[in-house]
Image 1 (spheres, rainbow, N blue to C red):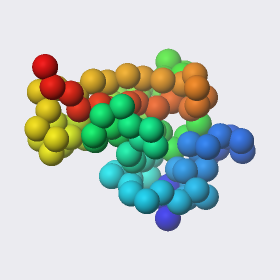
Image 2 (tube, rainbow, N blue to C red):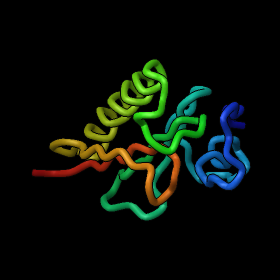
Image 3 (cartoon, rainbow, N blue to C red):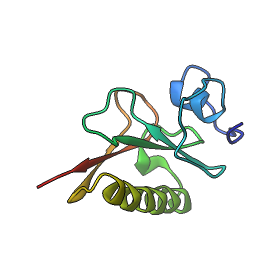
Image 4 (cartoon, helix red, strand yellow):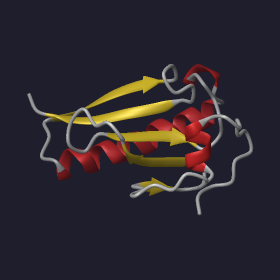
Length: 111
């Protein structure tokens, strides 16, 4: 269903999502190395998570080419969210703490 995982961590929920072990109602992007989907607890309509399929807790630990792809993909999705939700801008937050797997929050917002 989704990408195969080379660096999967057994107890990581995002690794399981990326591997297709935990089904999602909606996937907004999947290309083999990046998956995006709506946040389970959205801060605003359109709140989307963008994750790498390989397990890294912190984005600083990711290889540069993978970080570049993650942020290029996040930018493309943010532009789509901005248009779809008529937002003035899209907040971007990179996490790895509460769920110890790099994830980018994209949150459409108005001024």
